[in-house]
Length: 196
Image 1: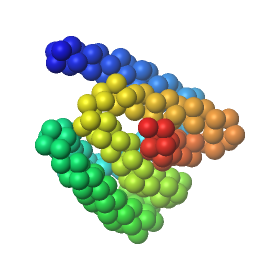
Image 2: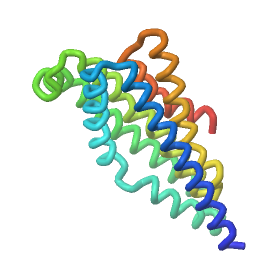
Image 3: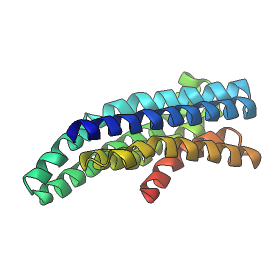
């Protein structure tokens, strides 16, 4: 029974990973065809810059939730599950607000001396909100895995990447250019939170 559940969960994650990777690849191809080389490079430079700080924000809290939620369920300490979720959400939100504030404060400096492209200013400022919206899908995934709902948890990444692909296609069609990718990343967390 336990082995069967592990195998089914692993298979679900593997299949979901294939779809998530395919959607992410198609998103990059769409951006490659709809953006100039400079815009494409600028977007991924800003995204990588933001992603570096995202690693500092997490502190392994989502992995801790996956470990402790089943323990609290077994011990019937449901109040502790709520407390743990609240703690992770509030601490991650606090760190996100701090990072967003720092990025907004230094955005002119970073635009001029780090990215060396005036178009980076609003890309950086808007994409900084990904700090907050990423909390939503990360927390949802940890919550679902903690409750052993691996099939639904496995759907988060492909659905997120599919949303981003469709958003990039739609906004590119309407002439949003580089901001089609920016809004796709920022909006992904909100959509995942609403769907799951």
